[in-house]
Every structure is written in structure tokens, then in C-alpha cells.
Length: 112
Ligand SMILES: [Zn+2]
Ligand SMILES: [Zn+2]
Ligand SMILES: [Zn+2]
Image (cartoon, rainbow, N blue to C red; front, side):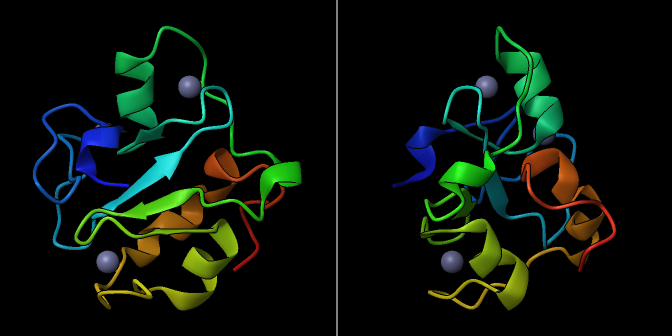
């Protein structure tokens, strides 16, 4: 898996997009509707020809998050529990926790 498999608006070499551009915004998320990786929900809205679906609970053991720095993929629970990339130790944006419910079907917005 590498950046060529990620879609994003104005995406840079570490999968930052025009919507989220800080040092920590280096993850891409996989969507249940098309099983493709996008930088964020806004990128999906802009670039996809269909509505976004969160990653489904029955596929929670499959990778659904990609580290934009090294291209490693991980499951949602690995991503949520680690907070950093298991391969390159890049720190991820803790603010993303507010949006987990939009990306992962089985997680509500209040769960850590
Ligand atoms: Zn989609
Ligand atoms: Zn975006
Ligand atoms: Zn990494």
C-alpha cells in the first residue's frame, strides 16, 4: 500500500489534504462504500461520485487506516489505541477522535 492508492484534494507526499494540513494530519481513512482510502471525509465528498459510508463493523479486523508518512496500514482499533504509527512512530492528530463515528461504524463519538 502506498500513496498512489490514496485520493485527496491537493494531497501532499504524506497524505495531508487542503482540509487538514498540520504536522499531525498524516493518516488516510478507508471508506466502507468503496473500500478506497481518502485523506478525509471532505476529500471523499469532493472526489467520489457517491455518498460516504463509514468502515463497517463486520470488516473491523481489516486495515482501514493508512499512515501517510510510511504507507503502513492498520486496523481502526490499532490506530485508535496506539495514537502513533506502529511502523514509523509518527504521531497522529488526537483531534481525529472527535470524528471516529464518521469513519468507523461501530464507534460512537464519545468513546475514546
Ligand atoms: Zn466511497
Ligand atoms: Zn481532505
Ligand atoms: Zn508510519
